[in-house]
Length: 269
Ligand SMILES: [Zn+2]
Image (tube, rainbow, N blue to C red):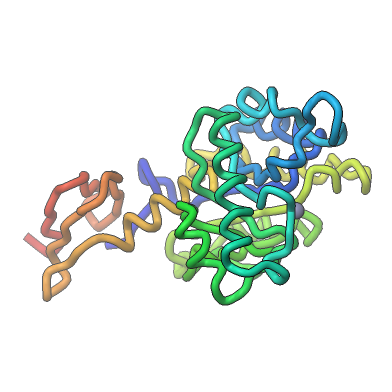
């Protein structure tokens, strides 16, 4: 048997865009047009308040602008974790979370490190602030899910031969379990480099496909973490789902689920 994504989807796509500049508006429009979901990592001290930070989206608009996507932390002030002790790092994350939650009316549990910088304590500090995952700026060039969600590395930045990665993803070899394509960047780069067609072409290529689960970063985290939380009998054939997520798997007889609280025998009957 092998695990698959919700509703039997073979692969997952997620995007992550940092800093919350006004160009996010055009990016969200493109993603919505093709049914692609993303996570927007914001610095809550750098949102337009009617006077300061006019190049950023406004405090008032983030709730509606990012509806259907995920709003997540990027540090209140975009400070590098290289320069903060644990207490100051905790403040930077917790205050960002508190402000974004009050602006969106939703729980905020994701993060990306400003500059991609983290140190050996960052993961623990973030957990204390109620953060579940955080992304770095380095990438793997692969479609494997991350080993450590506190040091999540994406597949590629959108400037790294995105169309080639898209084709590889559409034809990913079957030995890659739960293939995940994770693209990150900043929307202001499309404006600065005048290459909006890059993301528009990508969205047209990978959007609207039956075999792809379009998910936010947090949704990917929740599903993969639930799979990692399954409990097995000593022979590995009986599995118990202690989580609140429905888990999906395929075997020779087709598609099955392991419902929350359910124990399933997966051996031959
Ligand atoms: Zn940033």
